[in-house]
Length: 73
Image (cartoon, rainbow, N blue to C red; front, top):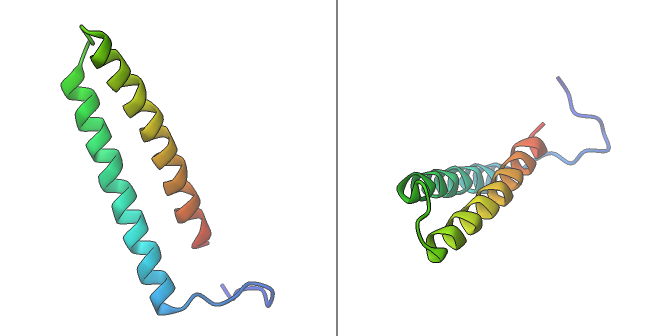
Protein backbone atom coordinates (compact mmCIF):
# COMPACT_ATOMS: atom_id res chain seq x y z
CA UNK A 1 0.00 0.00 0.00
CA UNK A 2 1.55 3.35 -1.03
CA UNK A 3 2.25 5.95 1.61
CA UNK A 4 0.33 9.22 1.57
CA UNK A 5 2.44 12.10 0.22
CA UNK A 6 2.55 13.74 3.68
CA UNK A 7 4.47 10.82 5.25
CA UNK A 8 8.24 10.77 4.69
CA UNK A 9 9.78 7.63 3.23
CA UNK A 10 11.82 5.71 5.79
CA UNK A 11 15.45 5.34 4.79
CA UNK A 12 17.26 2.00 5.12
CA UNK A 13 19.34 3.49 7.96
CA UNK A 14 16.20 4.59 9.80
CA UNK A 15 14.68 1.11 9.36
CA UNK A 16 17.86 -0.47 10.73
CA UNK A 17 17.85 1.87 13.75
CA UNK A 18 14.16 1.08 14.38
CA UNK A 19 14.81 -2.68 14.19
CA UNK A 20 17.70 -2.25 16.63
CA UNK A 21 15.50 -0.29 19.06
CA UNK A 22 12.85 -3.02 18.84
CA UNK A 23 15.43 -5.73 19.54
CA UNK A 24 16.84 -3.76 22.48
CA UNK A 25 13.37 -3.20 23.93
CA UNK A 26 12.54 -6.91 23.52
CA UNK A 27 15.76 -7.80 25.36
CA UNK A 28 14.99 -5.32 28.14
CA UNK A 29 11.51 -6.78 28.61
CA UNK A 30 12.95 -10.31 28.73
CA UNK A 31 15.43 -9.16 31.38
CA UNK A 32 12.70 -7.60 33.52
CA UNK A 33 10.53 -10.70 33.19
CA UNK A 34 13.45 -12.87 34.32
CA UNK A 35 14.19 -10.62 37.28
CA UNK A 36 10.52 -10.63 38.30
CA UNK A 37 10.48 -14.44 38.10
CA UNK A 38 13.64 -14.67 40.22
CA UNK A 39 12.21 -12.39 42.89
CA UNK A 40 9.01 -14.43 43.10
CA UNK A 41 7.15 -13.55 46.28
CA UNK A 42 9.17 -10.73 47.87
CA UNK A 43 10.36 -11.46 51.40
CA UNK A 44 12.28 -8.27 52.13
CA UNK A 45 11.71 -4.56 51.63
CA UNK A 46 14.54 -4.54 49.10
CA UNK A 47 12.85 -7.30 47.06
CA UNK A 48 9.54 -5.42 47.18
CA UNK A 49 11.27 -2.26 45.95
CA UNK A 50 12.96 -4.24 43.16
CA UNK A 51 9.64 -5.82 42.20
CA UNK A 52 7.94 -2.43 41.94
CA UNK A 53 10.85 -0.95 40.02
CA UNK A 54 11.04 -3.80 37.53
CA UNK A 55 7.28 -3.68 36.96
CA UNK A 56 7.41 0.06 36.26
CA UNK A 57 10.40 -0.33 33.94
CA UNK A 58 8.78 -3.27 32.15
CA UNK A 59 5.63 -1.23 31.57
CA UNK A 60 7.62 1.78 30.31
CA UNK A 61 9.75 -0.32 27.96
CA UNK A 62 6.63 -2.14 26.74
CA UNK A 63 4.99 1.17 25.91
CA UNK A 64 8.14 2.35 24.14
CA UNK A 65 8.16 -0.89 22.15
CA UNK A 66 4.56 -0.38 21.09
CA UNK A 67 5.37 3.18 20.00
CA UNK A 68 8.41 2.09 17.98
CA UNK A 69 6.50 -0.76 16.34
CA UNK A 70 3.59 1.56 15.62
CA UNK A 71 5.78 4.05 13.75
CA UNK A 72 6.58 1.55 11.02
CA UNK A 73 2.98 1.47 9.84
